[in-house]
Length: 506
Image (tube, rainbow, N blue to C red; front, side, top):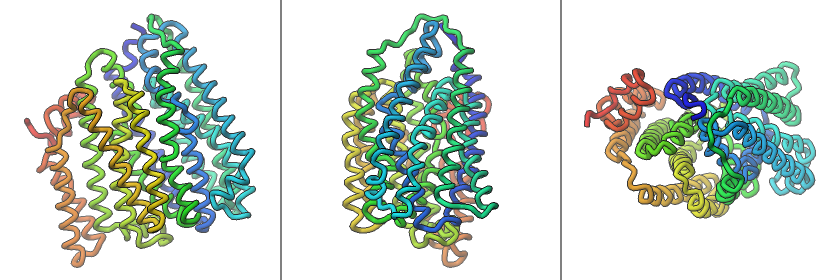
């Protein structure tokens, strides 16, 4: 076996430490940047800027053509037991092909930029200056792709360094523009382009250095046909995912409701992104995925299924708590976050949170289907994602509330059908419905209490009491079961003892 300790429990725990530190720095910087920017830009500029980033985000799946998923699936296996030069050759070709695809997309968009900008509803002032965003397609997606490879090798230290540098660099650039009193949309895009280019070069440097330190002595190889088959199945999934991605929905809102309402929608999306990023299935996906792949390759399928069950339950319980918070003080929280720019949209945020619950579950199911692998079936299920942009267009007749409701309904339908099929296919996943209902019931109870005492203590007082009661409430309802604790003990060792307060004995 080549590099037998690459995915050991010790490296897993080290990766978690680097990951959490990097994600904390990244999250704080990104949140400050988002909340400050909405205060500095006028609504038209802010909406245009967020739509441009929506275009970049949409290009992530659109330019992947299954390659990112192929890297996630095969790179850990090659690193663990690959033949000499097999790993280096795989990374080299996957990087070059993906870079060629990104450059081709960027050139195509640049050639038709004026028509695209007009279609998205940009003003005449913004149609020429915003072409800078096309360069972000190469630099942003490029650095994320290289960082994904580092994470597949459990090199979280360097990957998280690069990820954290992006919001920190953007924040530093914004500070400079404000200090010299020269903040414009064009100069802000220049900051993004320069910082993302530095991230791209750093990520490639760290990846090359890591690869040269891995000397393969195994006999495992990945054939071109196998990679092409896997990528081909995922290509259709990526293309359909692109039209239902957060970026594509943002562009559709700009097209149907205007750039300024798209700015409000994008602001709520950003808040949801911060929440979604720290859900367990998303937060730890790039650490857990290589570990689950190594367990699947070793034939330990039950660990894979139990890992999914734990992440499924954790995601939904946390989403339920956020929904309780928004239900009690949603309008006040949004007004505070936007400095009064946006008001009376707490209900829209609540519905979007409900949709986030389905989106996070679908991302988890997608990861598991790639591991088993059911990539062909996943591409079939991805056809259902067409419902989401259709729901946005139909729902736009009722404004942002209709858009949010349409998205939530469509993603829950897709998520539920896919999970139902997977559960039957892999021989029943032990989803802990009792533990989930305990967590959900606690959130509903606290939200109800918050509403009852809201008139007496005010929104902030009710929210504070609700949050203070949540921790002891979890200790009482105990949403974790013995299987969850066995899996957590396997990965966290002695640190898992801190979670025993939330676990049932049977």
